[in-house]
Image (tube, rainbow, N blue to C red):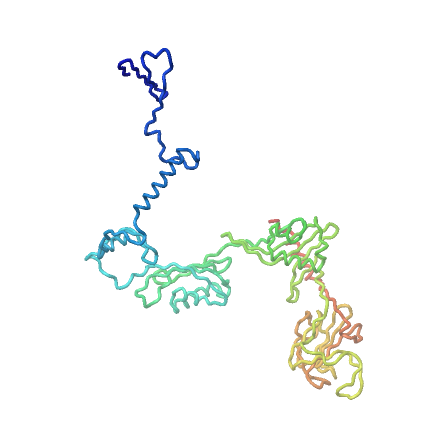
Length: 488
């Protein structure tokens, strides 16, 4: 507060202004307040996006133009470089140390960190030392030999052959599955001009056998390690929903077994007639090793329960052919004739001029032209009633089939069956020749119904296998054993 000659000054703290008034007028009139602004109240860089057109906005625009103009005026010319001193390039150890501490692209070394330069104690190596041991794996390929796989892995030819012979003494090399993995360890060699010696070898020779070879006192010693295997079959049951295939797969049956199951059922029942609610039953070969591996094999049993009809099929081998038989021992039905020989038809059934006798004669069969020695096949299952010489037929075979049917094969060069033997459809029974009344190698084929010849083209065989006697007893015993298999 400062007062001089009747003038009084008062500072208004909150208003930020100075009140000026004569002393004589203090009570007769109000004081006049004049605003005073400090330098801090001026905003040199106002927001040009707010209060556009105001005094502060125009001042900010002027400041922006002034700053930009100053930067352009004071900046270097674009066509004249700025001269500055450049450091001398590094050479020698300084350059090597700077490179080691820098990050560079792969093409330029790409090494980082500090690296000491070579001193007098460093001696260059003539060659890099080899590893004392090498551990690697190899796989046995399709059609590959065991010894050749070892040779490709680096084992010497002589040692690879001795190892193969050693393994063959324990298990046949042909029984080792393709893709088998071999774990190999090679040892130290005296120089790089000789192969490394085999120190150890281990692989799974069979599902139930592992073989390990180790070098002891300079010689390889083989150790077979048996693996216990459980052969209990896998049984899967369930209820058919929208799809029999999807229901069986969802229950855990392997895809291949389900496909075989559907083909087995197709011979006895229409797959399309199997509705939802029917129950399926599959039994599949299975092997489980104590090491945890599981393998599934062929389908052994196919069952279907449709309520009013129950079907049980078991795969059974008779005479070298595996078929699906139901619980009563009835096998699959096979329709149609197998062509007896691979050749073209040269003469049909009926009246014709005989090429040797020279007059019309009833031809009781069909002739097929074929080369001498061509195989002749049984057109259907049957039993050999005759295999020998028969006048004008020459070497002749007669087969008896079910349903009072029989077939005859004439002019054979030699036989492949004997009288009383059972034959299967498609089995070779003899070979084409020109014996008897014949002008050249061909097959004369006849079909009989009740002993009378009929046109072979008018006949369609339907054959069914039936089990009987001891074969049927063994079949039913196997079926009962499978049905006792517990569920998975």
